[in-house]
Image (tube, rainbow, N blue to C red; front, side, top):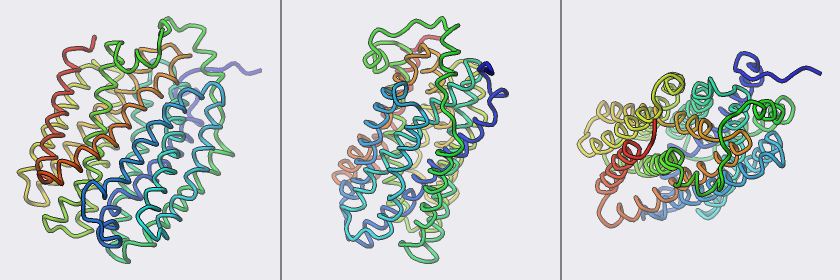
Length: 399
């Protein structure tokens, strides 16, 4: 029997397949990124920001809870099985988005999308960490998140373009059918489980096991707790960007195609940037990468209030994307570095539970503030919270 080896070079075929699969996972979120708020206003006459953002609230809560269970059951059910189950939940999503007769159906589609993302994305993250071993985790996470968020950007741009040319529905969502079918078939026939790689790493890991995985990952462990709060705030501002930016840009007079370009720039820089920042997380201080990344996000959000031209918004979207690129693979690499191999999937699940609850909290908070005090105040509030999160990392995280 062939011995199991850890490393990117040794497992490049499976790793590459997982990168491709994760691009399909990211593309499913990109379906909604540019045009769902417009569908709410134009087709269903929903004006309140809180109501429009209901699809993000539901998506965030469901994805967060699913992340937790994906981590808890990864060792019991197997990573590959979770990935396949995730795609089965994703398959109906584009059809519901195409033909939904009411906004309630859109919200229901986001329940399925949240389960799809929680199971499928969590599985690909954990499997890549399993494959590469401890030396290249940052780079591995950079490649994983690069593929996922580049796909978010490409599909967000394409749906915005298709909607501008052919209408909001059904044509933009044809992309989703292809993504879901390819993701499901690829996961069934080409992906292999990585439990043997975990067993191989167990033999030489000197990281102590956590006494209480949930609470130590949530806050008690200084490094894990710092990362978890920052993850929540990061996705809180991403949830705001997802729901509020298209509305803000529409109010400013930008058309659907321009909105698609601006909203795609942020995840595009986020995606491409992780090719570099993931490797940086292996070489430089994770603490300072996280601090600088969160500060850049907060500053970019604050300057959104003063932007007026297409160029201004593109630059700020790029800065926001780069700040997010600095933290995203570093979050996961830090969790992996501070956990024993047998705890890792569960700890990543807890981290991703809180991180993706940020989507829901961000959507609720920004919706309430936007309805009560205006869009600008909601953006300023989220920017302030992001800067505060950066200082929590600076003061609490070790090394």
